[in-house]
Image 1: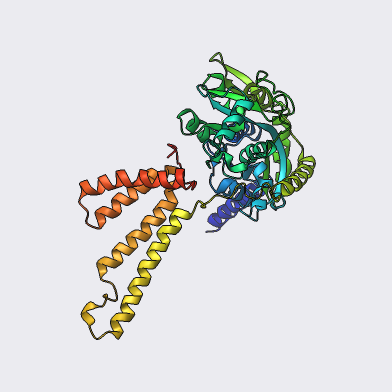
Image 2 (image 1 turned 90 degrees about the vertical axis):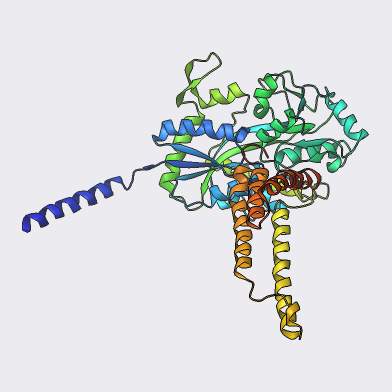
Length: 462
């Protein structure tokens, strides 16, 4: 028995020593990098390339998660309000200096631990290759000729690219609403909508559109930068075309408040090596072969700016930017920018209101039934078992929609939910399928395109 106790004691001591020895090691498991914008856009591409280089430095996987929605609120909140243990990084964008001024969230730059800014990019206006406008003047003339006819996108309503377009319109004496802005999850989905014919123009950075631009599918009529951009030397600036307007965005990394200082320093050290080109990873380049590439070389090859700032400088930059956008977004000229006619929760709110009215009608029926001498005309109370099942199914369908729609999209999720409910309520399957196939796209067209409600687009874009 003593020998057994001795062995158990030795084992416990070894485990204790192992735990103490590993306490100072960071990281010991994978790190999550939260990107607030959709896959395929500039922020997503920068995030994923940065993650690859951080993996090289830290020796642990860095997994990128796209948390879209809420005009950037969802991703910023998920990244900055995560557990402050250093295992969640947030890719923050210029919207962090804008969202709280628009009343969309209380979250601002003071609610994070700034780590390092990564790059900056200026806005550009892009049209399809077959569009009739070849210059900024021609595009402006088209807007003046038919205000409210042309449709644009590039990000959520009130985002940096929307603000850039609205600012140009105001600069030219036009209303910010003379071009209809369609809210989206980022530049990637917007550019796909542009080439498919659903939009007339996209406002985003040139690097975000580089693949479509270089393949000749889209054309840039101008860039809102003080001077022409390297890699896009043929694209004239707005200033060159007689419009004194420039605006751009920035990207950076931040941590939740309260992250231990030693872990902040580990991440900062790794980032400094990445942004200064001391880390190389193998990449498939234009010749189809693997080559070692640094992060600055990736930015240069893709046309991204490579301006970066250390923690202290980044903090000062955030404070200055917040003051700048505060004055801009609270001005009378820009107060209406970013305020959709109907918010994103309009559709679920309508469904909830109908459900609430139904429950109210049942309650009123009960009260009238109890006070009426003609009990046969009263609504049954409590409702029959089948009615309770149907009510539960409707509530479950709403929860299922909320859980899946951001990933799967409104049309697929809404169609499947509607079909299931129709079948549950006894509709013949042929009729139920026909209704789901006709009604769901029609509702999407009305809310997304007519009422401009930013419904979830999902992986397929609808």
